[in-house]
Length: 187
Image (tube, rainbow, N blue to C red; front, side, top):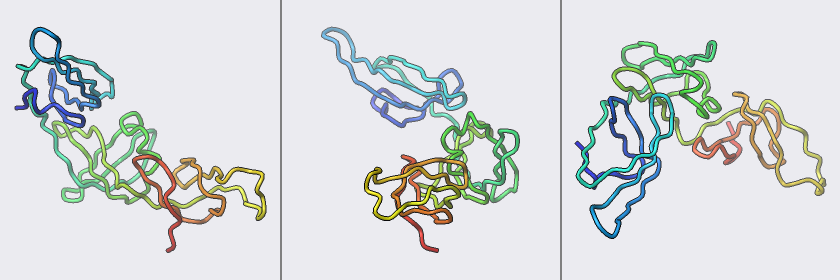
């Protein structure tokens, strides 16, 4: 059971039988009365944003969340299938549930799947992934009139800005938290 002193950004709490994650937190002390805690939260099942103000005597339940190591298998009709590494059970998440994570998923990737009441609701990706560039405009040496980056497409269909020396067929490392180019990978 959580109390008001446990509230912070990133905390997962149970409200009305559904898990929420606190995305922003603000302490407010009016001149009179008890302290208030203003929280912006996101429903972890449907992704809806929610604002709520709590008082210092409010208590919160911990959601029954479990994280399991799973392997990404394939995508079919907007559903992304994952296999549990221990039990070999398969679960799927929809495109809406995954959001931006679909930009970094490649076959056989190991991810952490977050389960609520044995239903998958989210995944945690590795901080960095290596993806192959499948589409890149050629760079002409001495071309100083253009900017110092160009747009490329990687094997998952994700488009990002990279330095001009990156070519089609190169593997690049991408930060999954920001979606930015990190470095070329030599294999």
